[in-house]
Image 1 (cartoon, rainbow, N blue to C red):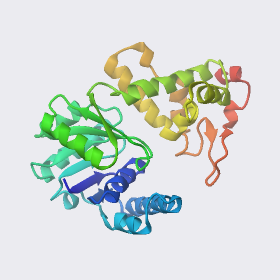
Image 2 (cartoon, rainbow, N blue to C red):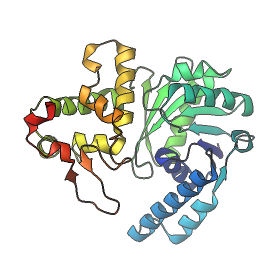
Image 3 (tube, rainbow, N blue to C red):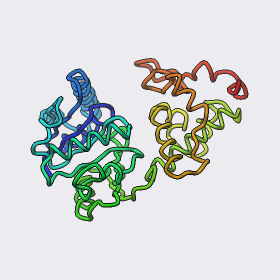
Length: 303
């Protein structure tokens, strides 16, 4: 596989494009506007500059990486010779299904179609195509250029050949692929997101405050980031979406999202992306400041 198409130029999409292009693959990155694509290329260039400054890559590698990425607004213009398409659009079921319907029409029959979904069923995505054996999940971790894991999700009809090809391709990116089966949340988010939801519930019930909960998990469990800070980093809307997938797919009350999480998403307090979640985020500042609502004593959160 040589020609890679990435659908979506947001945080995950531009990271995936970056990772492939740095290893010499020809990448076509697709989004709905030139503005979004220009912003993504600026982010990729800045991330490459950081790698150069740290001495992890040479300046020539940065230049080649950027040359390996071309941008497109129309899916059909990008996919005519695609060997692999990686969809990294918003975590919305209907949006992804519509994208895969279109990809199935415009891509060559031999093209493998992958989704970077963090929780949506690969089997369901594959069902809207005429090539379910060639549909697979490639769940990259954020930030993509740095994180080693790729969760490879086999749909019900994914072929052994396609799975092995995608596992090998992931290794070519200097990643560590792990094969999992297609059940709600897969492995990463079936374990991680309920833990985050439990941390939010602990805050909601007044067990402890934001900083206290995060400190316990960082110092007591050796987590590099506390679960509430991590929720802000992931996006509270994404956490809620995954909890809903788990709750609907597994039918167990333990996967019900915490009411506090629901209310924060409805209020637009989504974490880093909105500037406010469990913490306040100021552009250019690395200082963690607890959001005003949570600065009072923990037991006041419920009021």
